[in-house]
Image (cartoon, rainbow, N blue to C red; front, side, top):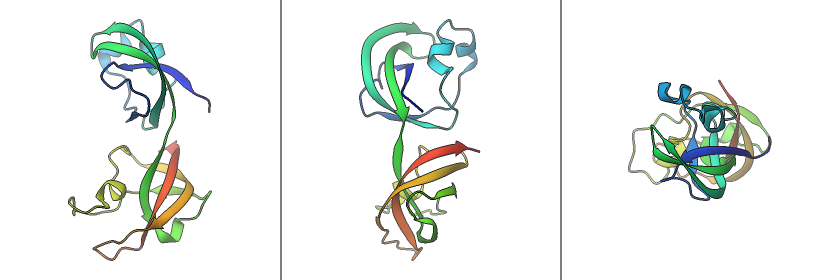
Length: 147
């Protein structure tokens, strides 16, 4: 899929910013910009801002929204070593872990994945040194389907 023109909060309209689309609010459904803001984005998908156009419009939710170009983003997550194979498509579940002070935690329990998804492993990066002795690898992945 190609890049998408959309509108996001002016506070987050910066190249490289990644976000997950959680869907429109009830206020969005009444707004004249609803289709531009929400019409082409997929709920549960992670997007990255690749260009900021500097065009602002008033928004009942975010004060102002800014026109940006986004693409579906890749992120780094920890996956079982058994499925850490480049080009493999996997059903993904976050690692069950309560060690929030662990250096691996943000990859084991990524905040940008908010619902069950299928991921494509783009690149296997390295083994995870897990304090719980789980056999994990860090991988660069992209969502291919939101379940």
